[in-house]
Amino acid sequence: MTPPQTEFVTHSSAETIAVGRKLAALLTPPKFLILHGDLGAGKTTLVKGIAEALDAAESDEVTSPTFTLVHEYEGTLDRHGKRTPVLLYHLDLYRIESERQLETLGLDDLQTDDSIVLVEWGEKFPSVVKRSQGEIVMTSLDGDARRIVLKMKPEPTAAKS
Image (tube, rainbow, N blue to C red; front, side, top):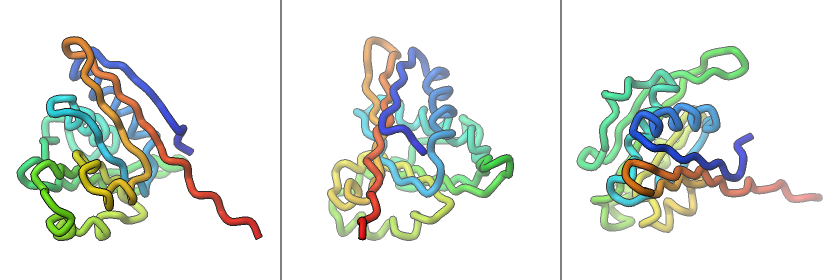
């Protein structure tokens, strides 16, 4: 179970990638999270570490999906000593201006039992916020320092009969 909040501070891109590797261990599919942070906060750098930890891509293969909107990476996850397939989707909604445009991306098709969906600029759209299970908030501090906070929404509890 993912803790409700986990916080890290990094001082370089290499440390941000290392935190991404640590976060990957907490992101058991299915997950749908918003990556929240200003331009240049290091969101894509963090995804590099997550992709590496999932054996989905080398860090230099992970780029910002600003113009392509969606990048898909196929990897594996260690579950109880067994490697299982995982799909990592990295989306950037910066250039999307309306819910109607958003619908063309097929978010429902990306959310599967074996996927981790990370959405930059998802906070712009109420429908994305509603479907998200939490967010990774990145804040620039002095110089190359970053605060990275994983905040999970409480899981719905089953109704008592």
